[in-house]
Image (cartoon, one colour):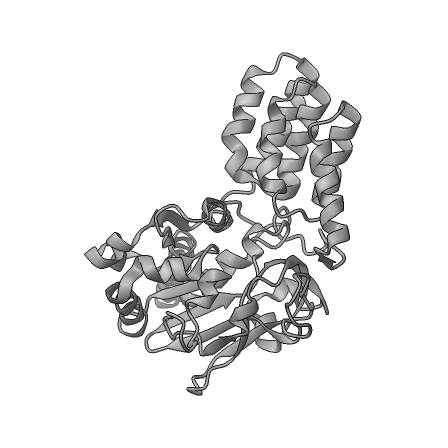
Length: 384
């Protein structure tokens, strides 16, 4: 082998190593890229919806999340953000808080700056093009039957479209998945003809409130998305952010609207089999939920059963009840409550569980609480 050949091979080897190093740095920088997301607060409305959205977004290791208000939108502070999430609560309240100038600012941020916007339930309402309803005209849909928007709620069925399966491949082999629904909008294509993509279709017929018509919610768009000017938007009719096993869908959708790499999330949050059946909140189901809620203040046996049942029945308000049971007088109840927080993915209760660990006197119970605290913390920013 000549000296020239050896020199050539040496240079080639060094170049290969350098290129490999560059690729690793690029990949590392990409994985460490921060996505700034603001969750809109219209000055105190629906704190649980805001908390649910915040905690679901924090599943993503690269999302920096904070509550934002209309004043920050108008001041230009949100120009440094990648996305805004409008949570559930009151659609009219959200647009009223934004005001006409704030609404115009949001639309310009999407169309001209390429900002991402995601709406959930009430947030989906305000993104529509609905006559006689204060809305942003962003998602290409119109909300109908608003006079019956108080129609009912429950754990609803939905199926993904072909495009939806590309964004949520974890669900691509499932014909039916489940998500909380709480009187979200009934969507149809807007009269303007604006284009949108239907990512998921609702399969449940929710009309438990007297006077609300049947066959309005089923076979309607459940998740929609659109490219608007330089930006992207998406709307959830239901509430994945508070559905155990499905909360990861919100940060995934935010990544898509931000045009960022769609990273995977670990098995402790991607749990589509957590619920296996539709649960519409009929009078009979509501009565059962009330019964088991009452048991949370009953005997030890009743409390232990009640904790399991409010989870099994997908009780909308179970998230509000369980953390207080970490302060129950019975050690078994305290431990059961800490287990329930993991099932519900209630990471907002981490401070409560930390305090429970700190004050626990029973050695065996303390060990159990510490184990469950570790599991609860691993939900936040967990990397697959």
